[in-house]
Length: 176
Image 1 (cartoon, rainbow, N blue to C red):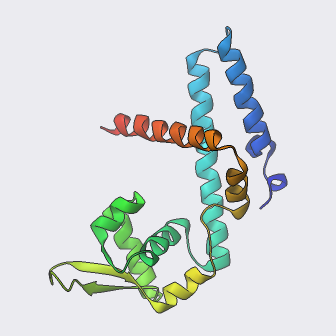
Image 2: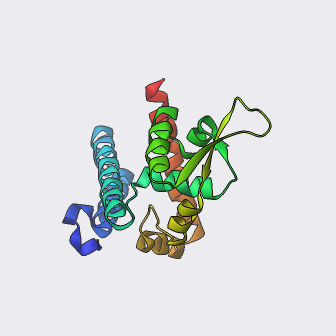
């Protein structure tokens, strides 16, 4: 899906222009805080929708959803991990990881094995077939996004990272 396939409000240029206009207005009289927070929530919904669309693309292309790919990628980076630890690493609930593991196990992409050190612990491991899938290098974020992000100045990358971290922090406090 290219940017031209997206509705105008989802085209990154329009979002960037809107954000820039908001910053300029905020420096003067500008819109009320409620207007800005509504815009932030609108943009977060767009991000979630774009992740959902990408997940559907991955399902068509590789037979994997975005969360399944995230789990496989994490398992490919380690020799085996308990479900609870994996859940923490990928920011998903243990119940979600268990469901994903069940689906991936049925497809032969992961397996459950008892820990050598503590037989009570069950470790999740990627299989050879799972490794083969990962060799196709499917990405959760589109390559175009990753390339565009890489071309940003370091300070811009850090600004985006800091802003997203702050949003996550703010959203976590609303759940407490």
